[in-house]
Amino acid sequence: MATDRAVVVQDVAKSFGAVIALAAISFSTAKGELFGLIGPDGAGKTTLLRILTTLIVPDSGTALLLDHDTVRDYRALRQRLGYMPGRFALYPDLSAHENLAFYASVFNTTIAQGMRIIAPIWQQLAPFANRRAGALSGGMKQKLALCCALVHAPDLLVLDEPTTGVDAVSRNEFWDLLARLRSDGLSIIVSTPYMDEASRCDRIALMQAGRMRHIDTPAAIAASYPRPLFAVRGRDRLAMLAALREYPHASSAWPFGEVLHYTDQRVGYDPTLIADDLTRYLREHGRVDATLAPIPATIEDVFIALGQDIIPPVEHAA
Amino acid sequence: MTDSHTEPFALNANTEPLALNANTEPFAINANALTRRFGTFTAVDAITFNVTRGEVFGFLGANGAGKTTAMRMLIGLLTPSDGSATVAGIDVVHDPEGVRRRIGYMSQRFSLYDDLTVQENITLFGAIYGLDDRTIRERADVLLDRIGLRHARKDLVRRIPLGWRQQLAFSVALLHEPQVLFLDEPTGGVDPITRRRFWELIYSTAAAGTTVLVTTHYLDEAEYCDRLTIMVDGAIAVTGTPGEVKATYGARSLDDVFLKLTRPSAA
Image 1: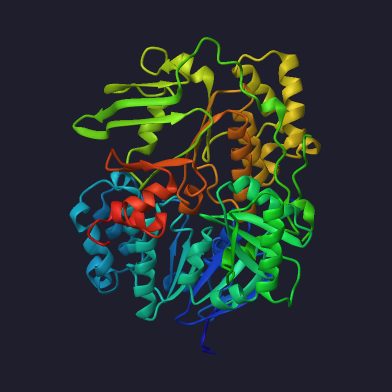
Image 2 (image 1 turned 90 degrees about the vertical axis):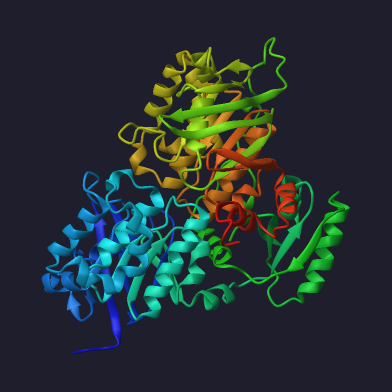
């Protein structure tokens, strides 16, 4: 039965020995949706993607992709899936062109037939078509891997951390490519440890320790931040951080780029009253140059809030 | 959310660096027209910069800009084609071995042996650095208490969570009390809290007098550095405090600076 769902995952669990990689995960994605799995290493992203791409079998639960069961219909499903694994998995001794021709032949197609899909990406690679894949730069390897994953015109593209270890500008360019593929109607699932990439997705799942802690649009997740949040500026960042954490109503304080993010425990208070009181407190404690401004939360703030009940505290030597 | 999670690391007397002997060099790192060519390709093109003692110095650049090659010369693993550099006052060309004894190095990719226990890793690296058994034992206790890992002493490293593994690798790199610590993308893939905790470890290490040079792809982390440099095509494009660098390019963020430098046509 055809549905509007690209992926339907029901109670999928997977353990490796005593390690629970995935704890009964359920979610679904719509056709044409760009869905992001956001989380640090060890959250279970790769295990989930390997189950979806039929490479490993879950201990329990079911996953349907494009109405194919990942265990029973794996052969039919593989024809319709494009998969870009986290590690560079192409043949380093073959040229870029030879790698692409090989992947096309595996899927009983040709580069010419695939060109409709891959042309915008392949254009950037064409000058290096005869270079050994192993000798390509990191960004070019990534684009070649994407071409190889797309050459058979899949209906669903699965990418496992395509931007890990890639510099900020190249990451941005890669997301532009994904946005273009999405606007052509392709369904995409992509994982990333970079929180700032979440906003490029239609919906995201925040993953942590084998669980999905939150599934929604990036804006809705950011808006769900439960407590008043402020950006704090001041010259001596370490001393400011310490002073903020000493404030009796402090929930947390962390460095965030050029500012500090301070979260207050008092939900429902007027933020300007909190800011006034905290500014006074900081002045009394020697932080005379402190400036505060209420700000909306980012995905990273939400993730930190989720994490604070999981990661054990660091013990002090003193 | 409990308060214990928000506390900073305590500064620790045991992380004080060794006395600097008769070394009067004011800079922890001093690179002068440092150059490395591979065949006809110039990977690092006459870079000149200083890092002051106790500074946290960010070393940024796009993939392939030459950061790793420059770092390998500074840690005595690769001989420069031209130019010179001293690290902890020692010449990297004439005494790379002397440099290696005075520095610590941690990379995201390789730092610890996964199939040894936490204690075995500490003992192994302590022995490699030439520390005696008693010193290794004493420092291991301090180090494990500092990161709260004493209970996991006998666990295989591959069985402990990534965030802890990274803090352990960082601590092991400090075992021989180096004067300069090189961190090559130390926070890749770790969760946002661990990433920030890690930076607090860096701060407290620098506050105790150890100089830190760090590479990262997270530009928000570059804001935490005292000063930073951005490499483009093998050369240094800009050096300064994060504020100075942004002012130089009239940019709102280091992201914008990075974009202007690495994709001049797009900016």
